[in-house]
Amino acid sequence: VEKNGVIDRWVKKHLVLYTGATRHPFILSIRDGTIDFSSFKRWLGQDYIFVREFVPFAASVLLKASKNSDDNSDMEVILSGLASLSDEISWFKQEAAKWDVPLSDVVVHKSNQNYCRFLESLMLPAVEYSVVFTALWAIETVYQESFSHCLEDGSKTPPELLEACKRWGSEGFGEFCRSLKKIVNRCLEKAPDEELKKAEVTFLHVLELEIEFWDMSHGGP
Ligand code: HMH
Figure 1 (cartoon, rainbow, N blue to C red):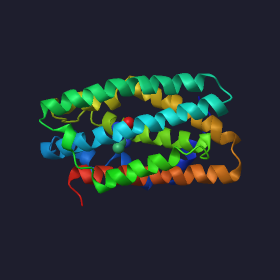
Figure 2 (cartoon, protein in one colour):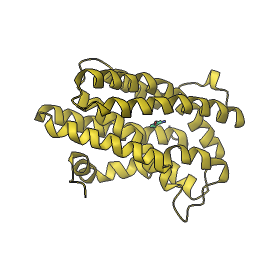
Figure 3 (cartoon, rainbow, N blue to C red):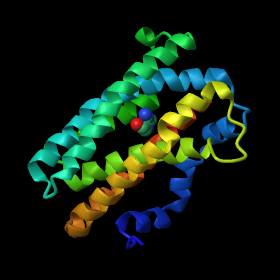
């Protein structure tokens, strides 16, 4: 049995916000089959833009791992994440063609812009490894927890959306997220108080940005 780490404490402490991000009405509408496909198409176009920005962010975490990490396996975990992002970009293009979403002229929504700007701020060399790793873990885990919920027994996810849900809801991606969590817990264990505080604020910021991203997809302002 794994010893409870910092992450489990934070998730408990901020459970309302965490649940807001991982059980959003957009996700619940996929799970109960009531989703409006135009919402899904909006999400698809915007998330493609997001993922393209997420690649350099993940690469910046890789760079920090190569410089700061005291564990060689960190780099391999991030590298495998980067490799699946290559696959993910191809998937987005294929999926967009299927749904008639023209990726070349997606207008970037304000919430998406905010999120991408936040990622950019984290790419600065001065931002600590434990802080950026917390963000990486949170970003991936919100999607894992959300989409795996749409695959659980009793869900009425439309067959057209199963592939999207499996991309992030599958056991393989779950395993990846658990590897990320172990690394974050290890980093945070050793972090000075001030850095720990920064990482916690970053975690909360990711949750807020994820909620706004779902709101945007769901048809919010
Ligand atoms: C907005 N958050 C958002 N998009 C994603 N693709 C992920 C997380 C997971 O990579």
